[in-house]
Image (cartoon, rainbow, N blue to C red; front, top):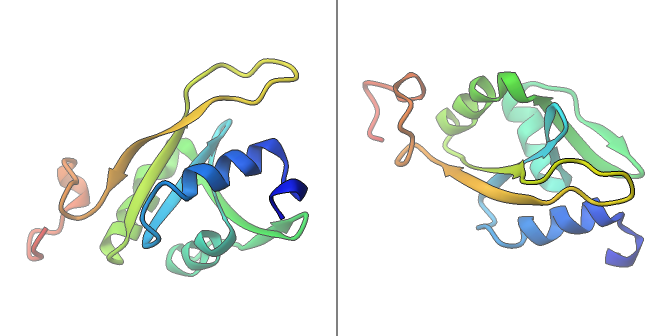
Length: 121
């Protein structure tokens, strides 16, 4: 199946494979964070957002400027969240470099707005 995937989706699969299976991957695409495959199915339920498909691949997403709100919901639901950001500028004919820049969980969150006062973090 990897041969049928676009270079960007191959990049996603490689990065997804580098994190624990129980961690959701938010993958930056321009002004959005997207989730794909099983991550998208689970996140769409937890976040109450639309699950769509492109070329048969389940996907859902959120604008990057609103990501903290969605990350907080996922953490409150007991999930870990990996953030994959673009690390190069888009250039015609080239794939954008991306790397995982954060892994968030209730135990690693430093933004006090994401923590619940009456819950062990």
